[in-house]
Length: 440
Image (cartoon, rainbow, N blue to C red):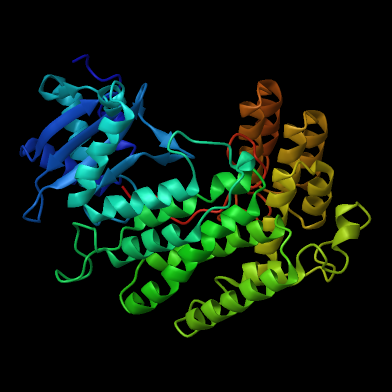
């Protein structure tokens, strides 16, 4: 095999110092076996503290490990959840780099299946599904959302069926198809990566402005998550982090959907019940932004004037809490997705989200205006750095360097200031995600 185009320094950057050191020890001890590469997918087994070896999967790209939205595409069956790659991933990558001759190269899955006809492929799936009940639930959810070869969410003619989504969510949250153990040896581990992937199926619909089909995914996931979390609340460390994300995504879906009054009332009643159950365990207001989106929508007093450029401050009182900030962010996301750029600019400016306002100006090719706005409104080097990155990604290298040079004269702040969430190649409002979405 051709030696990998990256080295140990690339691997070191993926993990904490402790994980890298322990991964190196695992590699040196010979714990890594079954190292197989299929196209851009690397798999291996790593002996660890459990009887069965841990299974590692890494997606490669030219020059290193693949990323999606800045998240490394690595998976491990271990329960590590403290940021960066786990020691098992580190060990696998170190062996991949140091001993390429021990990597077994096999055909990518797509190449293996390419020549099979429909009947043969169906027979394979059915045979496997008879041994793996989880595969059936996964297939039901996948087919409920769309064709396996992908589609444009905005072009979908049929509604997403929420029932398979609910069944898949319950299976993932119960851990009944998981080979891992949870907080005790007798409790299967929740498949949090699977839950995250299921929630992510709503995002293409949101990006296409299809809030109804997004809700058909988000509602059943939330409905399954609430009772599952209540059963585990006493020992949960990360599962609760899904609730703010679901609340934000539901708020976006509601704001872009023309729900009938009865539909709106029914959804609000369910959200009120779910939030009430969470309140009893300290998760106050995690879903409240979705409830507020249903109650207020686009009809909040003064909002229309602000979006039309006739108001200078939002909220009108000049003061808002974190829920109001989240609702404003959801509204900005929907305006962004809908191509309502001027309304976006007016609301962002009135809400003091100066980074988002400037980033949108860059996207509209109003670069000089964005730079002038930044010089007037920005107060920290962090704001300038993020906007400079947006300018760079837009091909405005000279303007990025000039703005960055000016930013060096500003003071750094410990926390990123409110109103700057530029991300994703200059998209002004980043879609909400949970902390540490890929812990490996």
